[in-house]
Image 1 (tube, helix red, strand yellow):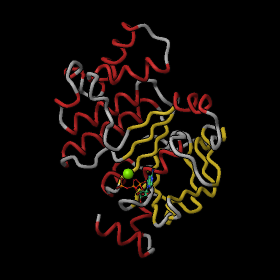
Image 2 (tube, protein in one colour; image 1 turned 135 degrees about the vertical axis):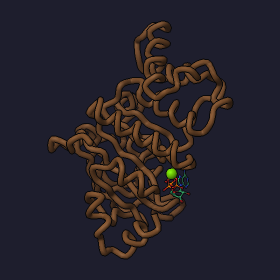
Image 3 (tube, helix red, strand yellow; image 1 turned 180 degrees about the vertical axis):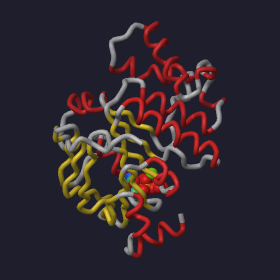
Image 4 (cartoon, protein in one colour; image 1 turned 180 degrees about the horizontal axis):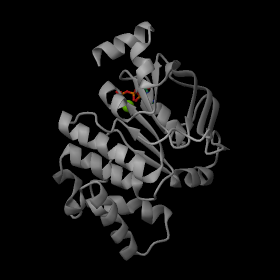
Amino acid sequence: MNQPGDGEAIINLTDLCKAFDGQAVLNRVNLQLMRGETLVVLGRSGTGKSVLLRLLIGLQQPDSGSIQMMGQEITGLPEKGLYEIRKKVGFVFQNSALYDSLTVAENVEFPLKYHGEMTAAQRRERAIEILSQVGMDKAAAKMPTDISGGMKKRVGLARALALDPDLMLYDEPTAGLDPITSGEINELILQLQEERTMSSIVVTHEIHSAEKISDRVAMLNQGSIVFDGTFEELKKSDDAFVSLFVRNG
Ligand SMILES: Nc1ncnc2c1ncn2[C@@H]1O[C@H](COP(=O)(O)OP(=O)(O)OP(=O)(O)O)[C@@H](O)[C@H]1O
Ligand SMILES: [Mg+2]
């Protein structure tokens, strides 16, 4: 496992609030991600984990509070500023969110086309290179509808890595996969951390993933962070909700 950060916060969330239709989803969330660290965010279904990740790249706006990404406040940032932030962030969507009308390789090339200045040949070369890192180069010409859920997750991961990001945000990278494929994805996440000294947030409800890949774990419940510490500390927590989650994990 890579060493936790060098003391610099790459993400700093202060009193973050977000409600939908008068229902608070995030209620004064305070959380930091240090450079080089892998933070796993655990929480039940519907607790706002995906909302939290979407706020980080400006896909949704908070009602109040501050979001500092790589030293820059992004709340209220115009689209151009968000574009610059998104360029540095790899986002692995919960349902892979591949473009069904594009091949696997074209999906990985998409961010390169949108953000980069490569020629078509350079983009293809880069896409194949990253696909081979996730064991998917043989499927480069396939359509997303013709590959399995686990393969889609790998392609989603490759697409997120295309621009060589400083920061990766993974939304449920192993949900819905069999235990072996799930273990392989976790291995891949660990391997990427080691090879690239990236900072990552991995959102999941799977406690085993947290054990395997986290430097630190935060648990979200009813809008707030109810635990923030190492996995070992999580296991020993006497908070009623945390221990219930751990016992049933
Ligand atoms: N655009 C939206 N409009 C209205 N409500 C929303 C919107 N996005 C999210 N919500 C609500 O916010 C709450 C949190 O949703 P979110 O998708 O973040 O949960 P989650 O923790 O990611 O759940 P899961 O583990 O099932 O993925 C849910 O009640 C959801 O219905
Ligand atoms: Mg979610």
